[in-house]
Every structure is written in C-alpha cells, then in structure tokens.
Amino acid sequence: MIQDMLQSSPGLGNFVIFFILGLVLLLIVLGFVTFSILAERKVMGYIQLRHGPNQVGGRWGLLQTVADVLKLLLKEDIIPKLADRPLFILAPIIAFAPSFMVLATIPFTENFQFADLNVGLLYYVAISGMTVFGVLLGGWASNNKYSLLGGARATAQMISYEIPLVMSVLGVILLSGSLNLNEIVEAQKNGWFILLQPIGFIVFFIASVAELSRTPFDLPESESELVAGYHTEYTGFRWAFFMLAEYVYLFAMSALITVLFLGGWMAPFGFLDFIPGSVWFSIKFFFVLFVYLWLRSTFPRMRADKLMEFAWKVLLPIALGNIFLTALIKSLFF
Image (tube, rainbow, N blue to C red):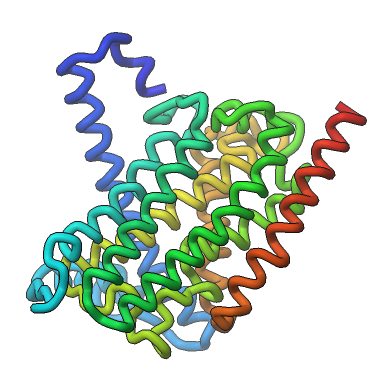
C-alpha cells in the first residue's frame, strides 16, 4: 500500500508525498466527473433514441462537458441579498469535502489505498453522513422557499435511507468478521458477497440510489416541483461544488459496491488471476456506474410520501430480516 512506501513516523516528507498523491487523486476524480457526465448524457440519449452531445469535440461530443465546466467557472457569482451570507458560502464546501474524504479508505487494488483503517467501512458511513449538513445549510441559508423545501426533503431522505443502507451491510460484516475493507475483499476469495448476500446487496443498492439522490429518488432536486431544489439560488462555481459532490459520491459508491459485494480487485475465476487486479476492479466499477446511469434514463420519479414509506416500511424490515437470516445461517453452517 501507499503508506508502506513511507516512513512509519510522520514528517514533512510524508506530508508532501500524501499531498501530491491526494492532488493526483483529486485530478483523477475531476476527470471522472467530467466524462461521467458526458457518459450519462450519451447513455440517456441512446436509451431515449436521440444523439446526446455531438458537436463540441467531434461527433462524440467529447469536450462538451469541458466547455460546460469552463462556462460555469466564468459565470457571475451571485449571493442573494437576504441570504445568510456566511452559511451560504460555507454550505457547498461542507457538502463537497466529505465526498472526497471517503475515497481515502477505499482499496482500489491490493497495493493502492490511501488509508488502511480497521474501521474503514464505519469511516465511510460516518464521513459521508456529514454531507447532509451542507445540503440543509444551503437550502436554509438561501432564504428561498423552494431551496428550503429541497433541503428539508434531502435531509429526511438521506437520514431515512442511511439506516437500511447500514443495516444491509451488517450481513457482510458478519460473514467477513471485519470492518476493514481490505479484509472484506479477502473474505470473498471463495465467493463474492453478491452471491452470499443477495438480499443485502439489493437493499444496499436501492438505498445507495436514494443516498445519491438519483432517479427515481431525486426528490431534493425535482425540477418540475422545486425549480432546482436546495441549490436553486446558487450560481457558477458554488453550484458546481454541489454537482461535484454528487458525482464524486457516485464514484465512491460505485467503488464501495465493488469492494463490498463484487470481490474488489479479485478475478471471478482462479484461472483469470493473471489479469491485473486493477483491470478487474475497473470492469466491475464501470459496470456498476453504467447501472446507475441506466436507472436515471428509465425510471420515473417517486412521490415524496411513497419514498419515505418505502424506506421505513419495506427496506428496513427486509434489512433486519437479512441480518437475522445471515446470523442464523452462519451459526448453523460456519
């Protein structure tokens, strides 16, 4: 791992190396965000029988998102007169920072990980839960009724779906006996957890879509009802921070699903071990990402009351039942 290359005691050299590596990861993530937006628009275009971006950057529109980002950065930064100025400025930063922090504990390969924490899964859940403060503050500080309603919806949705999300991975923890993400991957040598925990995987995936506020659970940003939700009053680079947080979490959640349920960097069969782990991780990662993009193109938006009922009355009981079933099976057969 990266930290094994460094000295055990912290120092200026360690700081500089980690800073540079963190900067490299940030650039990689920014590149991912740029082209995942393009991929999303192209996937939606093909599914909906249209072309999508096809002008800027050739027939594939490869530079369309780059042009959009440059346009955003050049837009005027407007702060409403009656907004709570300090909180209005701080909210996008609070929303974005946790989305990048959670990447530190994700093992992309056996030898590439920034922080091998014994409680890596707990770290991810705890840090990602902080984003809700940025969303709520952004909605409240804007002094706009649509923003406030969007912030309230986002808070209720993220808190509600975080419970079945966490409950669904308890089966994985029971089978692996660890909260360490590396050990969870190693525990899948004889079988991926998507096969051993199919119920947990389904609950986790559905809850993750709601946590990401993506269709059909995009109630906080429902344009037809709330203009743009909690970031209605944001412009330019501050609005870009909210969008950046959303797509960085898409990156992080796709990677987390790959680690928890799809065996991480491990090959599906032993005779394929000659292929590098980074290749297997990438294939699984991009498959999960495609499914997220696919869902947005095909499902209609849920009603707000149905969305909350689904979390508490459907996903939570199923997740609890999965924990009981996993504990029973482990005590009888393992």
